[in-house]
Image (cartoon, one colour):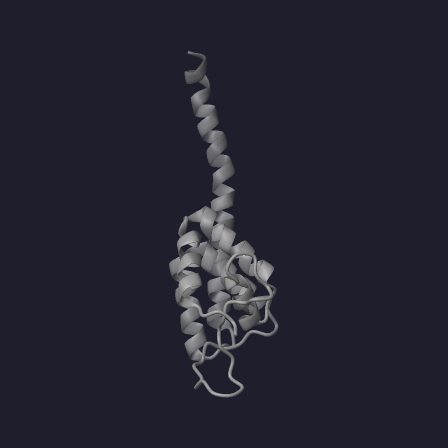
Amino acid sequence: MFRIAFAPILTVGLAMFMLPLMLFFFLFWLWMLIDCIKSELDTTDKLIWVLIIIFINFIGALIYLLFVKVNKNYKSFKKKKFGKGTKRLYRSRSNRVLGGVCGGIGEYFGIDPTLIRLAWVLFTFVGGSGILAYIICWIIIPEEK
């Protein structure tokens, strides 16, 4: 009897906590999407980032914020022919915790690998896809020579 009387109060309390949180996530997502559309990125980059923000939702918006908005050294997604002087993605030997994937991505994009690691942990806890993605990247990305 005691539990039944407080069940509606708990439900209302949970809803009052979750509603502002969901509203914050949605508004942040919408803000990053609009910012990406209005940005001065080239068309290919803009399309890729819009798709990332739309399909990965809040996490995609957070990735856009970290990689593009905060990062002053953001490089375009444009494909370049590989030759002398071009940059390639490798797993880092010097900046590694496990396989050097986050260190290599950080070096490639010119941002702190700690931010990459934090995003990866967030992916792991949010949907569980972070572990599988890290293993796939560990296998696919070659090690630095």
